[in-house]
Image 1: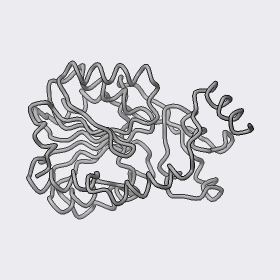
Image 2: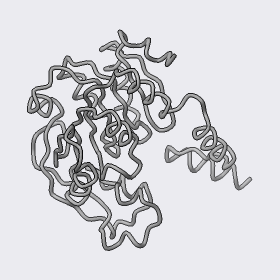
Image 3: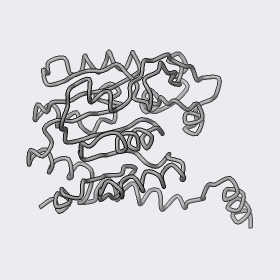
Length: 251
């Protein structure tokens, strides 16, 4: 009876109760599945299908970083974008021996204005367990609160921002092969802006779980309009230009 009541209350607020066995089994499947993110990137880099990339939300280049190994191994030309100053300094240090990297201490937004990002106060990080709290930054304060950060532990940092299209123009890119985004809830905004302002057709990888439904519908419409094929894998969405959809065979 109590379970039904909690389930109904959660539904009112747009949430869904999930059996803990499902969560544990899903995580186990993610780690051991034949078809996973690591297999996809290994194939793409091994086949030299990614020769230039943009990574938005590069953090320090180590924590929860999917691309670090491949960027270093294949010396891939990479534009790494990280808005938070402390993370940015660590990012440069972690790639200091690599000449194939361009660093940008910027936030990506749909305009070029100075913006404010919210993050966990470094002095309060000791109150939270898990490295991911260091990397949680967002234009939306509620995004941090949803991750369990107390409102009083959130501070804002002033950052310069640039649109994705102006970043591309700044670096004179007429082609790049991968747009990888981890922007803590702002991913869809960046992709929609990119799809509506650029004719370049890279593979796009973004985190989609925190995207509001209406915005996600808009994203899907834009991907369909630009003739992308896409699928979800773990928390990410992989989007391939239709003409490159044969890559998905990974054989």
